[in-house]
Length: 320
Image (tube, rainbow, N blue to C red):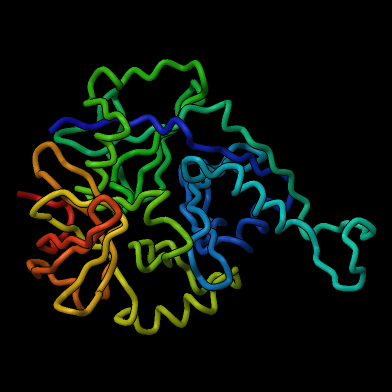
């Protein structure tokens, strides 16, 4: 199987400049961004007070600034959230229009999405194309003279390379890869167990539930959601985890996963894979996340009649 190339057409990039740029992200994200260096990016989660996912950032050093790559289609919401965290809150003046704004951090935020092309290389056989180095540790950043970078992704995010290229720069390695359109990437993402930005990396889940526990550093200091995540980390058996499903026939979403009369989870993503047939990703209670477990997936066919389809739980990657 060749390496696979997928262009993230709606990916976003935010430039964070100012003397407090590290303190700012350190106060908001789950991971220790002080480890960001020229050849090391850091992946961090923005969480709400309940410890649920607001966004996932890949943070790179960009000279006198940081460049934060955000989930596809989320740059507007990410900017709005980050800007809201800059301003001091005060209950002394009830009308915001008459309140003088003060800021907690000396930071400037700029949407630079239009300046970059962001893509993803999913691992295949052999070395990466185009003379790239094989992924090393998560966050390892290869830098190039034309301003491009290749960042090694954590295993849960595919274990490949996140490519960042200035707009207009020719991406030579495309000729040596299998190109994926949106549908093909969606199916391959599910097969490999990569959580999606609109399906699993959402406020319905905590980082622990979607495999991002390694991006939560509870020792680095306070951040939104830390209390709830510390509580969850004490006993993960009470939470959910992502599993693969091999289905007897196609389904539509929403859909639930049941064992007997007990609903044990929900289907988060579904696709018909060209080699595997109907497969899905589901979030289920950890006590039921046993490979080979036979379950029923319930959904409403045509939005009317409730239908059940047999399925088998599996680890990732999903195989025949």
